[in-house]
Image (cartoon, rainbow, N blue to C red):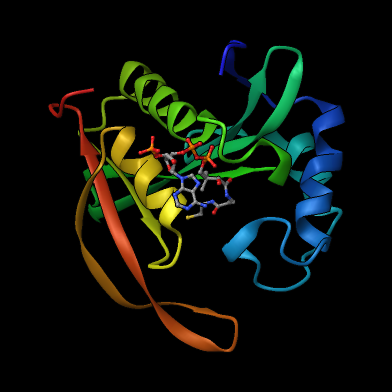
Length: 170
Ligand SMILES: CC(C)(COP(=O)(O)OP(=O)(O)OC[C@H]1O[C@@H](n2cnc3c(N)ncnc32)[C@H](O)[C@@H]1OP(=O)(O)O)[C@@H](O)C(=O)NCCC(=O)NCCS
């Protein structure tokens, strides 16, 4: 990947991509869980531009092009000990080019720089080899199997839980 990868805030033209992910079966990959309200992205954008204290989205840009987006949302095992859970979706034509692991590493740097969290976690599917490898390259470690983590494609399925701590090597 010779072009510069950077993260930028969501802009109004990006809503078309979010609408596609909501209504095109399988475009988002294994996270496809049926049709979603295609108007929701416009409402969310109008509410806070996809940047709130409890989470957000940033677009993954490659030069002047937009490859997809990264997201984060707040979680907590104890009320005062909260963490971020991150996610990512790239459009198919941008996958497998070294963008996914870099974008997730950049998101970690951004979140560790601007928020005091100690822990960033990510959950993925046992069959999602690309995301498992991308998380490892972004500095995440496998913690274990979350049994029956999600109902997807007709049945309950396990998830793989990864984390990266502030103190882990970047
Ligand atoms: C998962 C995803 C973010 C990975 O990003 P990516 O840009 O495609 O992956 P990268 O090019 O950064 O590759 C990272 C590593 O995974 C490997 N990899 C990439 N695609 C792979 C595939 N289909 N199968 C196995 N390994 C793969 C790469 O070879 C690389 O490892 P290496 O350097 O040891 O060779 C991206 O494919 C995507 O958006 N997929 C659809 C949405 C999704 O699954 N999101 C995550 C939900 S939990």
